[in-house]
Structures are given as structure tokens and as C-alpha cells.
Image (tube, rainbow, N blue to C red):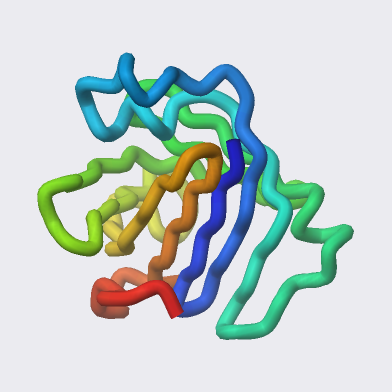
Length: 131
């Protein structure tokens, strides 16, 4: 599986492992479960060098979302709403300077590709398109 995250600042593409089959998914958050490897990352519209992006990993277990880029790991919980268009995802941070704050985003999953677009701070509005 691949994960792509655009973040009015961040765009990442991750290759996942151990993901559930589409037919087995009852809860939209189940599609996120497992381990993912980043292959692309954009911050503020600029592509991060490949060697840095390739060091990125994501582990999702139940409602815990743990992205790692280099030595940085910022755990959060996440909630999705697949009834919206585009589908929404909210991250509430569990530690660090963003502890207790929520960042709003959108997501799409197409086969093994996951794309997430979100702001970098809680003050940013939810994106309404993948651009």
C-alpha cells in the first residue's frame, strides 16, 4: 500500500504492509491500519528530497496514528468521516507542543495508495481539494 499526504504543506506517498482487504473493511478507519512506508513528501508545495521522504514511516494501530520522519515521531489519534466529499480526517496530538490540538485534513484511498492533505497547524482550515 502507498500513502500520500498533501498538507497544504505535506504530501507523502507510503507503501503499506499487512493492510486489510477492501471487502473486509466495515469501518473506514480500518483501511489505515498497519505499517506504511513513505515515498513522496511535499511541504508548502515543495518536494522534500527523496532520501528524506524515503526515511518516513507510518504505523496505525486502532485509533493511534504514528508517523516517523527521521528522528521525529508525533503520535496522535485520528478520526475519519467517509460520508463527506472529500473524505475528512482529523488528527489530535497526544504529545509535544501540539498536545491536545487538532489538525484537520482530507484523505483518499485508491487501491494501495493513500493520500492525505492537511494543514501544518490547528489554525489552518481544512483543505477542500488535493492540490
